[in-house]
View 1 (cartoon, rainbow, N blue to C red):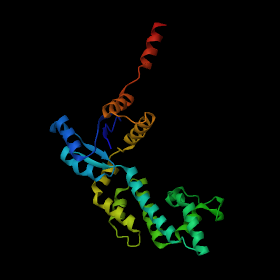
View 2 (view 1 turned 90 degrees about the vertical axis):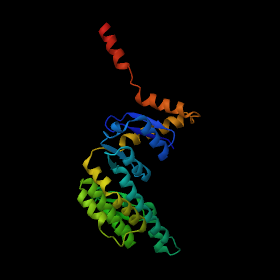
View 3 (view 1 turned 30 degrees about the horizontal axis):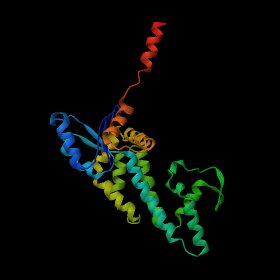
View 4 (view 1 turned 135 degrees about the vertical axis):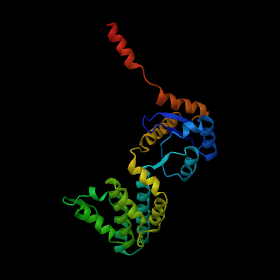
Length: 261
């Protein structure tokens, strides 16, 4: 797995390394940038990789670490989905009524992961295995199949609302409270978030996210797929840098033609 870092404001790729292990990263930054330069870095936005959180204070002593909002949502989203699958598999037995619950949880999994504010509370639609129902009523019935699923769903929705309102104090209160009835995957991930509360607080203070670098990663994967891979890492790196950092000269040529005309 390669490692890349970009300018958070401009979205320009600064460099790409052939490996993302801590030794390679530390060697690169220490040899390329002086301590004086690294002390000027104010923020570093990362996903929830524990390795990055460990080495950033060594390389950038004055930088505030910001956890990316998308990855926090993804973490709790996966916890709820794992809880749904556990409940669903428990209901996968020969009993006809239990099998009906199993099929419903399997078919309508997206509705459980959907934001509560986006559910329909007024429009009736026809749904397979339910008939004519409100979307919110379907979610309520799915949650009634298991207490743990309902409790996990409620903490999931509460965390989403706190992030949507940009309310750090509400999110911190949710993380610090004890939730005995939620599932084990959610408990584990809430503990992880509790450990990094300071980095989560920075997420609410600063406007930076990993959106730009995630978009770049997606394009890099497409380049790699179209080329059927690269034998030489340097060729691969140069191709990426040319693609993202080379500015087109079309506008300048058009201006010259207009001036000549």
